[in-house]
Length: 154
Image 1: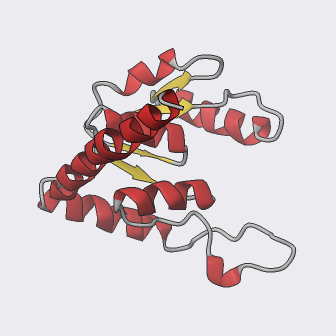
Image 2: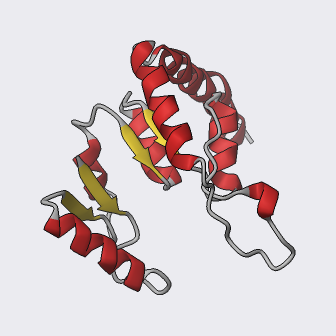
């Protein structure tokens, strides 16, 4: 088990929370990494069997290394990447409790949903990800490269 802080530990909005998490990790001998300032830190994921997290870039990096990844969606970026790749949606917030003042209401079923999703994937030998990896390959070779070639030929 490893934990990463993609934007660093001492950030503009999350320092108090991040330092609480860091202290918990230290007290429980859980390895953690501060990935701020460089993409080199993503290499810490290379030997992972499964990635679970909130950050879209870690999710994409893991998937690009053919590591199954479960993204907990905090916003439309996470929703969009999971939708594009055909992965299930796992919401961090309870959208049924959203209000006009945009207060965050945690998804009370998140842990159960995550646990169920992990069990499902383990029982099926992560078969869904074979399709995800193929989808990524197709998007790259059939869409992205064609788009780049169109731009080069302008």
